[in-house]
Amino acid sequence: MKKQTRDRLVLPILLPVGILVVIVAALYGFSRILLSISHNAATATALVVALAIVVVSAVVAARRIVRPSSFAGLVGAVTGVAMIAGGIALATVGTEGEGGEGQGPATNVTIVAVNIAFQPTEIEVPAGQPFTITLDNQDAGIQHNVDIFDNPDLAGAPIFEGELVTGPAQVTYEVPALEAGTYPFRCVVHPNMVGTIRAVEGGGGPGGGGPSGSAIAVVAQDIAFDTDTLELVADTPATITFDNRDAGVQHNIAIYEDDSLETVLFKGDLVTGAATIEYQIPPLPPGEYYFRCDVHPSMQGTVIVRGGDGGGSPGATGPPGGGASGVTVTAKGVAFDTADITLPAGQESAITLVNEDAGVQHNIVISTDASMSDELFNGELITGPATVTYTIPPLEPGTYYFYCLVHPNMNGVVTVA
Image (cartoon, rainbow, N blue to C red; front, side, top):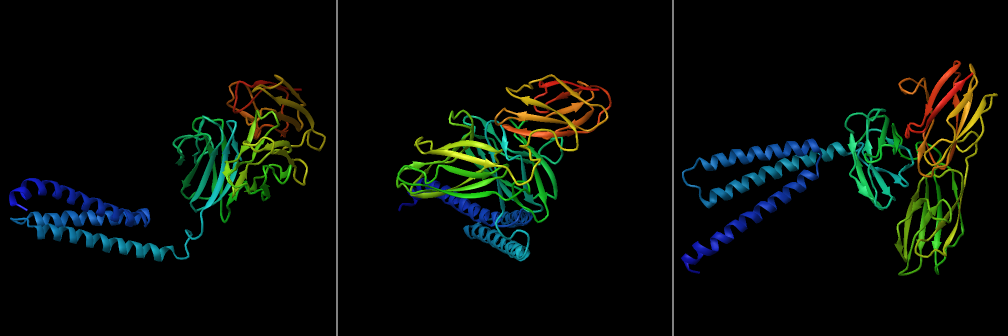
């Protein structure tokens, strides 16, 4: 090759390209080291390498003539420092990690967003350990996320902010370790979508510490389910292992409030056979529901959700024992069926709230007046369709104000006499 051609054509192209390749390779290799170690170790390693680059560059630049050998020495010295620092960090992390809390798989909990509500609204995770949240957004065309706060008022910036996802879609959040305690969460787009995370020592798993979830198996073969009845435990997460044995055919399991298909309670991902998938079913209130394959509607059946062993569950109606008087208030169409509640003075009483708004949260709060500044009673939120009976403490004679915490336009007057 002629010297003129080399100096004017080849070198101006090959030299920058070669330098770029070396930089990319160095950055990629160094990034692998930093991603393999903890945050603090990565920061320290990066600072050491940066310092080495500055020092070695200063030494090379101080020479009158910078030869290719000097440049090669610079690259070699920086690479050596990076390898030594990264190796020390990896060795340190490996020693610290043996027998530590980071061993074993991280806890994963699933939260379903459907009909502008979270299911479940209470989850439990181990304190002091990172965990993951899989958000299953089943609201088509609607954005949801999970923001976690360290205070019951959900004030200030969240301690964890999950990315928004437009349904139907799923996203898995990597959540850092939480100290033991209670942490509320909500959707930033729909503040009425709220729930609670309880971080407990030695705990973990969905369901807020309640009874363990149901686990059942369903087989699809020859365009038919092997059962037309699914039995689940009320107010408890469940797992359905779905075995699609129809090769090349898509099936799924979707649960609806009834065969009108107006209200979706759960919609499983389509799976092409032959294949198996596990569906995580959110807690459902007692009752009978409808399930089917969305691709083959002739594949259908009934979901029977039975209550637990004891009485006094959220699904029970009527006032509690002990002679307390009670009234019933129905929430339907985002409105209470009455604007007047009468309670006896000076004694414990009961209010049964029947929430008929599927997938919508309601409750009853009693305050001294319409300013809502002084609460006398704050009932737990329930996601419809569901029923709960509140036990109201004794109140002095007078006129008070009641409302729904999520929908303050749902309100009325409590007369205590």
